[in-house]
Length: 236
Image 1 (cartoon, rainbow, N blue to C red):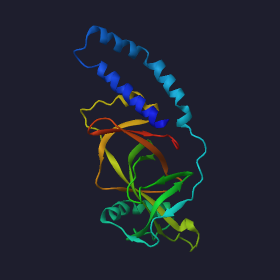
Image 2: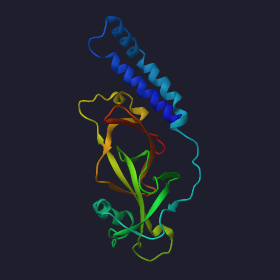
Image 3: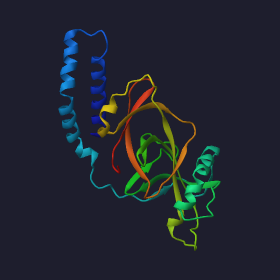
Image 4: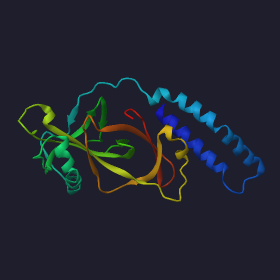
């Protein structure tokens, strides 16, 4: 249902943009004016009808993690660089002043964070986007790796599994080209973003903590160079 709603929204946006192209006959222009005059009512009706899938029921209970390999894997240079970039904040978040970026870590095929499960394809690449909500900023990207590494909290040693730090490695989408019109800015409540279909080569590392907000996403091709990605608003 979510994918159908996104497809319908994209088709409607494309149709409205086509009505605004220059050189249209007066009759077609009049149709565009009528559609614009009804936009508020149509938008309200659409968004109210979307409540069912914007606020899904309780999640299916799944194991917290699944190891893709039983032994630690040596991390790539890209992953090491991404982890080192957040090393200072990890010392604070993990309450571990001695935290150092690991050179090897465990790979996971999926991980459950705050009741929702996020997965990679064979532990390497995800086929669906996910969103990382950082304050008022929402980032969209592809989940390329899920990794974990052990650590010891300050003030004692514990065998509890909370002494395992988990990370998502995301490759964020490039912003849309400046000359491309974005009709979704008119419908911010719908939560759709027009972005380049390509991603940055360098991943970013995001700690998978309960305090970190993530959300699943769906995606649809917009044109040869762009995609529309939609946050499912499960944690927003």
